[in-house]
Image (cartoon, rainbow, N blue to C red; front, side, top):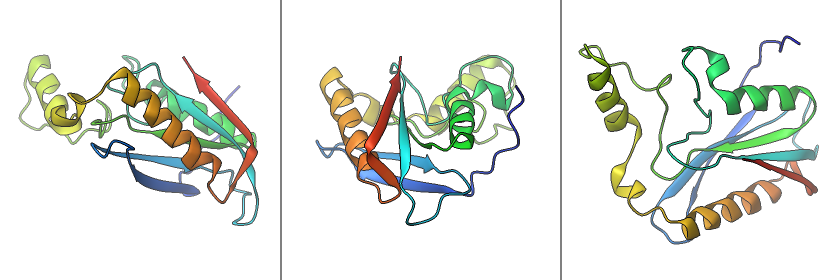
Length: 160
């Protein structure tokens, strides 16, 4: 099945402070284009297994939009009438595909260093624990569930 072109125009960007106050989590909720302010949508929350994951979930070697697995999944689910919440994990701001370009990088090592410098906040990443990772999931769940355009009785958490 071919997924039609998807516009992120019907998205809500958010930033919420973590319960321990050590970081701010940024992300977005994407909505079907037919969704209005008063419509309540069932919500899917995407939870990755952990690591240096941003909301798009870059996994792959193709250097294409299909490598952004969470963005691709969100597009498919939104087209089927779901609101989809994705977020950047603590201290992660971007991925290898959407990082600022490195015009001076000549080797893979230089590209990797540029990615870390541009996309990863190591001061925040040092504070990540199993406990606050679970707290972040609970925070995001509550945020999405209570968002005005989501149906708080119809929430799916998809994780691996």
